[in-house]
Length: 60
Image (cartoon, rainbow, N blue to C red; front, side):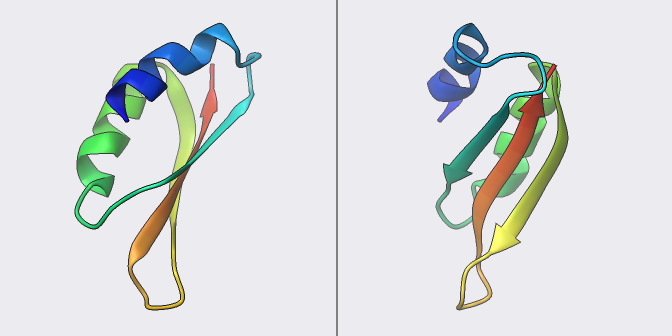
């Protein structure tokens, strides 16, 4: 996931959206990495079981 976050700016336009399906307990660490790598408007969504499963962020 960290590699995807790091490489995504090479194919995202400024303001482009990165969407990821994540595993249990990954959200906090990945949100921190996204913030360090110049992503903004970072948010998560839960799946039907109430578990944080999706992570979204805009680049730039």
